[in-house]
Length: 134
Image (cartoon, rainbow, N blue to C red; front, side, top):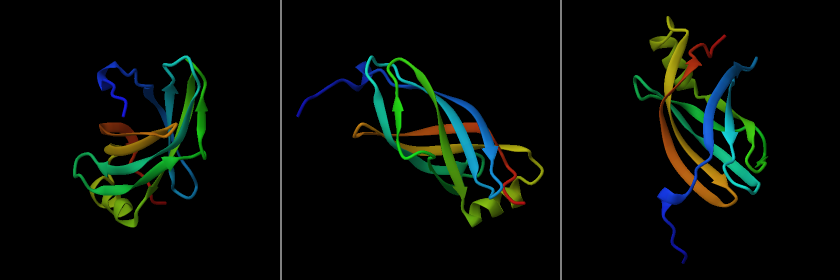
C-alpha cells in the first residue's frame, strides 16, 4: 500500500459565502471551493451533521445539493449544501435562540473526492439564521 505524508497534501480551500432559506425551511449554505491542483477533481459527495455550537444539540443533516461536482483545475466553484433540520433541532432553535437572528454551528463532515474520503470538523461555523420555523 502506498504511503504519503498527509502534511504534504495540498487541501482544497473552502470559504463560506452565504446562506438562503427555502420556502420549506431548508437551509442552503454556499461555499467557495478552490481546487489547488492542475487536474480536475470530482466531489462525489459532501455530507454531515450540524450541532448547535453553544449547546451541542444535534440540529440536522446536510448534504451536497448536486449529485456530484467537478472542480476545474486551479479554479474555484460555488458548492451548495442543504441542511435539513430535525424536529428536535427546530424546537431547540425556537426554544433557546428565538431572540437571536443568527447562531453558530459545529459541523461534522465527510467529503468524497474521487474516492478519497476526508472526514473532519468545522467548529463555530456561521453565522447561520436561527429562524427555521414559519
